[in-house]
Image (tube, rainbow, N blue to C red; front, top):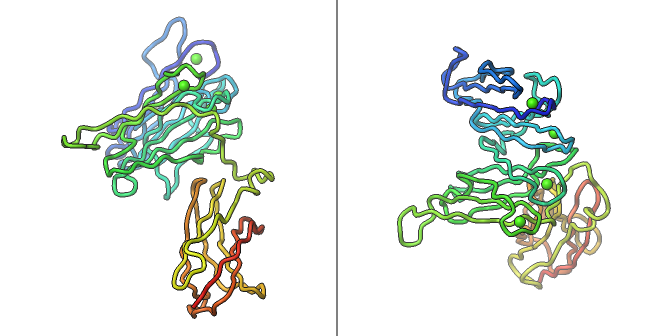
Length: 309
Ligand SMILES: [Ca+2]
Ligand SMILES: [Ca+2]
Ligand SMILES: [Ca+2]
Ligand SMILES: [Ca+2]
């Protein structure tokens, strides 16, 4: 981590209050390797809030691709990123996690998409009534600490409770990983299950500052069903980045009659229902309407839908 050719090691003690200030503040210690390693920590940090549990997990690897190992020190809620360098100090270079996406456990995954940068997995086992989810943070020289992809659990059985790098199990050159789901059961209570995911070279980083045409052209209104519709129709659309989107519905004269704001934290297909009312809550007349998806002041891919009363 300090680029001196000797491997180093880190210790977390999340439930201690050795700093003497707060219950379960936690601490973190980094010991530099060398010809005569000793037991005196070279870097020492303490949590500064009750229950912060600094050191809940520590994730190390070269996430920004400069050939020096980095580490992310986690508390209950945030990850503190320290880029490896000769003179490491206690100031984090980046803090990840926010009120919508609290993280506590980050796991180094190796390089799961084969782009030369180590990647990170984060477990969120209690998300969605304990269905759980795992977030993928792809390493990059522009690492921004925002997750790029999310894998959802489905069975209220704490998907993502534990995660592990698996090395390259199938020999395709991409690192693979394991996700545990301890409360899954089929007949036997809480028998649990483990998923093996193989690495995927098509996983790409989602970059908020990246507005190239490849990304923008793939915001799409896919279609609606039923169509024509009488009461309610479900509009399906896809997005290829996180962000704030607007689904706009225009009448044939080009007037905006309805708009819905949608916030998506991951690329994917989503739906929106429309029950034929305008922004004031009044029913609109029979006829043809145009639906578009808007992102950053651009509108994409209008489709026609028909309301019949
Ligand atoms: Ca070292
Ligand atoms: Ca690095
Ligand atoms: Ca990677
Ligand atoms: Ca593999």
